[in-house]
Length: 332
Image 1 (tube, rainbow, N blue to C red):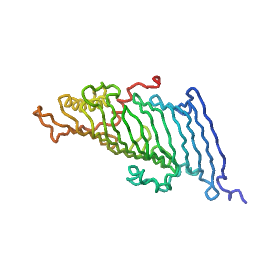
Image 2: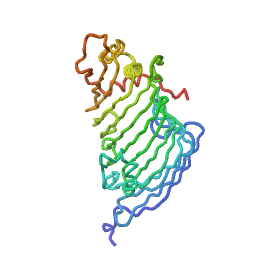
Image 3: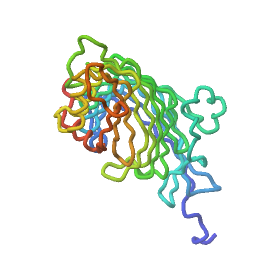
Image 4: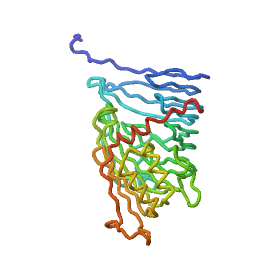
């Protein structure tokens, strides 16, 4: 046939295998270094009925991998196998996502009951284990996750971890969209129980009362590009917390005492007010904390409604506070 009648892209079908073993950290990408042992395989191919779509099928086997990300995050002891399946549009240089771009609101909380009916949406499940993660001066341990990566969806319907002597249950769904960070959307929910706030960096050990925290977290949003606009909505509710734990939490959020409203709440707690419910709604990149307090009988001045609402706190304010803490890489 004539040259101009030929397909723009030829048919592809090839396989890639990779084995990685390193006793020391090896730079892999910008601000990312790996050490340990993992293997990967991938088949990359196209079909005759649509030659401009590449299909990636494969798996990554983590045998004992460690990773450093930037100056503030370290991941130790990654184990497990993660299969993946993804299509890529060569003509438009975009990921091809599932025809079902979003899942219903009940999906995450009712995953265990609905899992048998969702095999067509998220068919590739695997178990991944991580010994510990350090971010700034915070540490998470014993992470176990059930997850999948297929059709543009990163799905983590079940995850558990240890955090400061307590337990965290976590669920997450990330839609990669077209593949750009600006187009990615996500939703996650979490339940925390018996987190010992006395272990938070920069806090004192509780002596006379429990410093444990329990609560729920629900967030959804779009956009993950640093420095770009991020649409985040959700709420953190702390439903079980004592005075010492509340003071520890506020001190951890604002270790330098720069936020006057947080200092005011800490002063009320010092006078004998007892926390009943802490709410941290997030809208348009800002926290809008509300503290519901129990009034002590010996304080004559009453707080209207028993609540103290703090004016908005930009998320960047808290991130800046956390970023002043030292990296923990040298403490491994």
